[in-house]
Length: 143
Length: 328
Image (cartoon, rainbow over all chains, first blue to last red):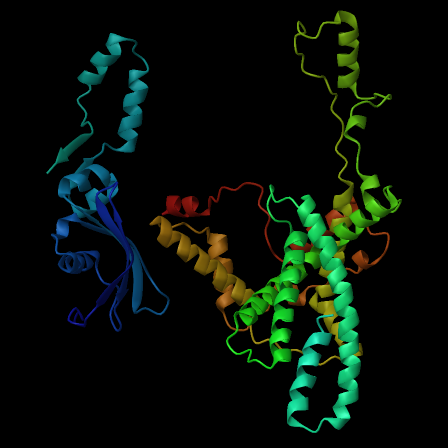
């Protein structure tokens, strides 16, 4: 059972629009892939980057849905002017998907327990308690 | 009069080519007619020139429609006489400037005609008025509303007007009056017209239902029309297309609820016959005393809906998924 990654996939873009307000190009992407499973987003990114002569890291694609019967899938793609703009404008979950952002969150239970403990204190004591509880806080580390 | 003169021209032409005898008598009669008509035209002309000299025709406000018509008529006559004179003398009328002018005036007169037709009613009315000196009794402008009559009704049953009138009577000076919002008590809105529409709608629903259509089809001689399209499928296709278009325009995927997705899916299976085909409709809307808003009717409708298997949930939360996940 070998992967048929050699089979070609054709990418067509529709409804192309240059969004000057958000410094990006947005389009609807049609992928034709007969006799092949749905194409991975990374592959589509590379192909789009080649088509629009940019690097792959400013291309964000999402929302791919395969038509019934297979062979064709439709999704959206956004190509930013620079990576800075991309980091400012794209929602965090998409940045996480692409690996540009890491979101560390404490477990939900832990957060709720901490909140309940802080309810017992008042004023500056609350702040002390917050500092005292050496739990892992939400860190946003940007690679 | 314009009609006589061209025929005069043609008879003159024929005389020169064909033997004279048969047409001569006719020609003589026409000539006599010509003479009399010319006399009358001459008289009219004289009167007109008198008027012009007296200054009865003023063009300060521009040229009126009838002014234009009269002028072009006169010009037409003049040019026509010019050509006839030339013919009578035996000269050629080829490339004569009068002909061009004639054509121009003819076109103007023909263009004026539809405008005149549109104004016909007004013109006749005013002529009649001028002739009789008094507006006729049939004039519909008598039925126009009188603006002065608005607001001066003696029976004031509206609370607001009564209050205001009372206040003005008290103070007498309208400038120092504080404007107070009129207190109009709330009254029940009677939606009378809607029930008739609802009756009509219910009646049409029953008549167009498949049950009655099959029953009627047995007794009519109309040919059967077979449609090749499935209405339900078309509906679902259209809905899906609309959804797709919306998603692509707004660049996001919309969530479709489980129930909606199931309903969209079940239509695409082959051979689906919807509930519209298989249901029974009560024939009450066809009766005269049908009241669509009565509670008995509403209960009946709700009952039938439950029988079709559509579940009417009290709460909108679907706890199925969470419970399933929790168990796992």
